[in-house]
Length: 397
Image (cartoon, rainbow, N blue to C red):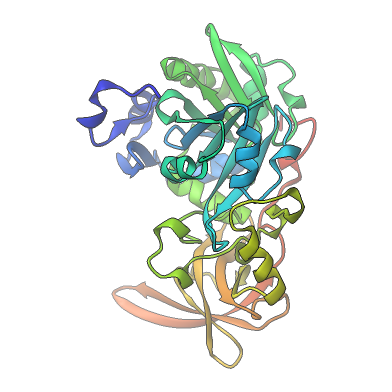
């Protein structure tokens, strides 16, 4: 891994796009994402969200932790690490995955990029190098964290494909969801994947950090006519809740950082049973997950349509007899769904479609706190799932 000499002298790094994000951030609102400074908002959270859903936005994805896994045993290692069958992930494809500890509890989730034979990139929110190296004992693989070596932008929204066509990326509209393709850009490689964290039509762009600002400038040169705007983490958070996507440290506690074992969650308890393939052979947590499948899970993740318009942030969830059966992990008023929505972790067997659930919401107005018991309806599927997200070929809109 190529690390700047100042790595041990500088606590927080600028991303490769910082010269442009800093100039665009009129609100001067920032936070630390791992070891990088990133914008929470640029000009107005509501307008940034509106730009995402009606035109397109760019989000600085560079702090996403990236690991390059190579070697003769790369596939065998990946299949031992994660719960899904990586052998089904062909070169040029991207797959969502989770990995567990021996107790079958989720350590983290992320995306696997099968770049070419025996070469994978694993992206995750959390730093996972220690876990990966410990899991690699006995495998002939090389694992390198390359976060500093790859700049990344998420280009998301209905006009995102139109921007890339204007950038000159030939036949980009034919790129399938969870596919990736390489293009030439300023004498270097630009990797484009049809992936994202917004639940909308969108792409992620991966490039050498030396070309980051040039890519930013070219995108805004060609994207201005179709409404391209920068977007911060607050608008991104709104979109990922609407899509029903979970986030480590918010909707589940990473198992390698938990103090109390009962606070962690298995893939079954996060509505990710579809990612568990018992037929592929051994993987970490397999025995524990087989036992859980036989006896049943402790919790389940549910999507809720909440009565009223007060977000149920951190609300307790009750059954019809007013017994506490869970807690809300993420909540918002959704402009796209025109509904008060939430993700919640509830005890089994509660949370099945048709169950009567209630959220205990507290909200403050003019220095007065009010309590509201809001009825909740269990929702199946994403709150927001437009057809354009999976359309092939992608349209210009």
